Structures are given as C-alpha cells and as structure tokens.
View (tube, rainbow, N blue to C red):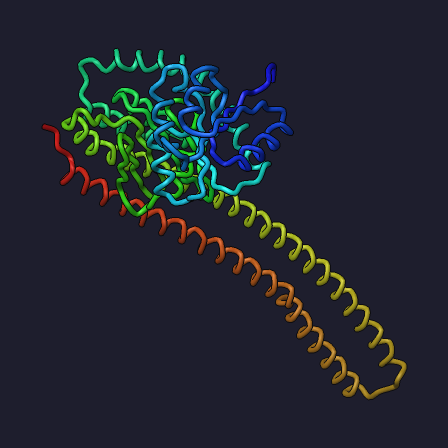
Length: 406
C-alpha cells in the first residue's frame, strides 16, 4: 500500500482498544481510538478514516445509532464499518446489516482474524469504488432502455432468454440485466454442486451479505428486513437491497415478479449442473468402454496364444506317447484303446480351453462396470426429472395465484 491505513476503533473497553492497537500495528496499520459514540462521531467527521471498528454496546448512543449517523453523513457514508459484539445471533447480524454495517465480528476474536477481516473489507472498498462509476453509467443506460417497457415485460424477456444461457455466470448476468431495468440492486448466491457462487449487480459482495444469506432459513420463500428482501429457491437466493418501501403498489408488484425471475434462474442453474453431471457421466462411459475394449482385446490375445501353445503341447504329447507305445510291445487292441483314450482327453481339454476362467472373469468385470454406470445415469435422470417437475409446479403455482398485474 502507498500510505498507512487509518483505522478508527470506537469502543469503551480500554483492554479491547489496546488489543486492537497491538494487533493492527503488527500489520502496518495506524489506529485511533474513541471511548464512546459521540467522540467517535467527532473523530470520524474530523478526519475520515479508511475503516471503522465499532462496538455495539457503549454508554450514551450505542453502536447501531452511531452507524446510522455515519451512514447519513456524506463524508463517512462509504467508509467500511465492522461491528464488534459479544452477540452472534442472526438477529443481531441482521440489525447490524440494516443500519449499514459491512461486517460483524464476535468478541473475543483472534488478532489474525481481525487483521484478515480488515484486509478483506479494504479490498471490498477498493472494488466498490472502482465499479461504482461503471455501475452508475450502466444504470443510467438501463433506465433509458426502460422507457415504454413494463415490469412484467422485462420479466418475460428474461424467461425467454434464460433458455439459451449456457453457464451460471451468463444466467446471473441476464438476471442482473433484468433487475437493473427494474432499478433494483441485488446479490445472488448460486448453489453449484457442493459450493456457492456469488454475484452482485454492483460487482462486489460484502462478507456480511454472504453470512446473512447463508444463515437465513432456506425453507422460507421470503425474508424481509427493512428495505431488503431475500428470496430463496433450492439452487439460488437473491438479496434485493433497495425495495421501494415508499411505493407500496410497486413493492407488491416486485414481490410478485421476483419469485418468477428467481424460479427461472434456479431452474436454469439446475439444468446447467445436470448437463455438467451428464457430460461427466458420458466421459465415464467412454472411459469404461475403452477399458472394457482393451480388456477384451488382451483376453482374446491371451486365449489365442494359450490355445496355440496348448495345441502344440498336446500334439507333441500324442507323438511322444505313440512312440512309447511302439516300444512297449502292446497288442494292437491295447494300443488302439490307449490312443482312443488320449484322443478323447485331447478333445475334452480343447473344449475347456474355449471357455476358460479368464473369459468368465473378464465378462463379469465388464458387466459389473456397465451396471454401475447405468445406475448412476438412472439416478441423475431421476433427480433431474424430479427437480424439473418440482420447479414446473412451483412456477405454475406462482403464475396462477401470486401475480397481480393491476
């Protein structure tokens, strides 16, 4: 960094102030402290810091009130704020997020953890500032394009275009193009396999937003807190950060449209993930068939070689036995009896060579391999069909009962 990062710690606990000062000094950061909310506000307005660490419970005005005042002041409204609290419930985190905090750290905390959180927030601030100008220009362009188009028309346009999206990133971009036209600022979490992919219409997702979405009750379709609304589907969650509380009619229309938009995105993400699984299954099939083909080739080669060697050995044995019989001076009928027995034994061995144990083991391997792959394919197709039916039913229900166009 070109200059020392200025951190303002507002906390009435001198021990916590000392711990913060020591931890951040080791990371090369400069720390100022304030003992209460009033002095903290004066310090922040007098010399705007790069980041603010704010205790929740303080004498006089508490941390939530301080945060609200900082967010309504032009000079400090964009400064990242980290709440420090001994409470860790979702309710306290929601309250902190509602008044404008960017992160929430539970006491007691490790020095390394605090330093890491600050670095993440500083990077988040840089990204936000870099993208703000681009986002404002894109928003102006979207507002111009919005003229003469209805909200439902934008939603239907997204539903039509979503059929052609080929990736989760493309689906998120298409969704944000629609929400931008609706003048909504959103964050999207997409569940892809065992991981989560994060997208934001403004370009950056704060750590607290991630925690709120991940800790929310996913079984609830809507979660409203202030002007924020969280919409949940199995594969996607959408956080809308600027719902129009001052326009209840438009608020109601958006509450009807958002599930339709997210349902389409959720279905597309599910289809993309299923296509990826099917592609992987196809690769597994190709590898399996290749392995089976090589196994059969080696088996055939082994059988041919063994049969040729066995036939040569048997011929040599018959020749040697014939010579031995001549020297033994047996009667003609005795000699004929022994030769017939040898011929019968040779024929029996030849038959057994044609159906050896190697052949049975090889085919058993092939059948087991193919059976396992077919079971995987059936499971994937069953899951896909079930999800498709569920999504179709949910979307039909939303279209039939929830939409209020007028």
